[in-house]
Image 1: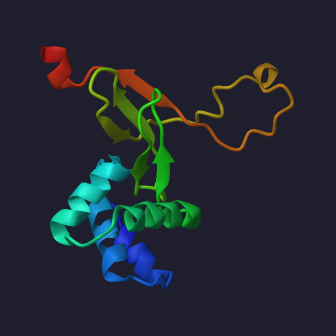
Image 2: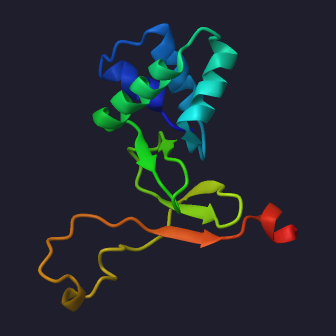
Length: 138
C-alpha cells in the first residue's frame, strides 16, 4: 500500500476535505487511476467534490513529486502514488491494466556506453507489455 497520506501529512501539505479524499482514493497497491476515475471514486466519498478540484489536486501532487503521471500507448494519463519507491510497470496490451513490478538489476547498466551518445543518463523507465490473465483467457 502506498504511504501517500502519511507523506503529505509529514510535509505539512494542507489536507482539506477535498485533498484528503483525492489522496485516499489514490492510496493502495497497484493504483493507476485516470483523473476521471479518481473523480468518480472521490464523489462516492464526497459527492460535492468538483472535477476541477480533482484535476488541480492531481496536478499539485505531481508537482510536489508525491504522485507520478504514467502514460501508456496514447491512453489517458494515469496517476501513480508509488512515487517514492523505485519500480517499473507491467501493462496489459489489451485492457490497459497496469501493475507495479520490481525487477532486479540496474537498467542503466544494460545500456552500453556506445549507445549513450554522450548523454549523462540519470534514469530509465521500462514498461513490460503482455496480456493479463483475464485477457489471455479470452
